[in-house]
Image (tube, rainbow, N blue to C red; front, top):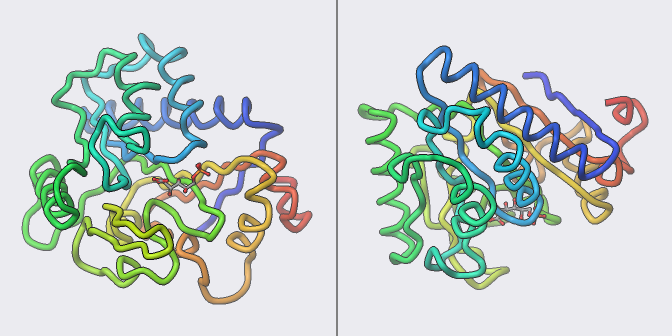
Length: 249
Ligand code: 6PG
């Protein structure tokens, strides 16, 4: 499985390239399958990407055929400042003509286990899954934490070992909380996994995660779509410590 690494000058370029990737993935999925199913990332990096999508593609995309899911959620209600849903709603979903029924949020106001099984049921219904079938997202947006986590797959947590469930409640003792997260079987069944990584603060972990040799050490390294595209989009600051051959991108 080839890893594509794209390095762009700065965060503005990263936003533009990420938004363009979203647009092209949406257009081809809608053309081929009549719908585009995308899992959004949380955290800070995607905020400005979502805002740009709302600004630039409000009328250019067929939002009626776009279904929004979430890669993970914090164990908070949807109006909480830490809610990934709230962030995505404020920057994107409330700004574009997307039918409310196309927004599939994680009901993290429930207890963690119920939120996880509820979201698994939502995925099974929306993707019309039978038995052990996996959902195939057209695009999964991901970030990289400074400890090498992605979605809410944190180092040393139980979710890293999940091989059958689609969504789990993951106890993250480092944060003393639960997170609800998609699992590796789902991330690795996607048509495209797109990592967006920005800023000096991520240079060290990005270099460790993207090094060529050695067994996967960090959770983000285990995102390896079996039959899909893996694209790492970094700005120059985040790519600062990548071995030079990588810098050419
Ligand atoms: C979350 C995310 C998480 C995030 C990384 C990077 O809910 O926080 O899904 O995996 O992508 O922590 O976050 P930043 O973009 O804020 O650096």
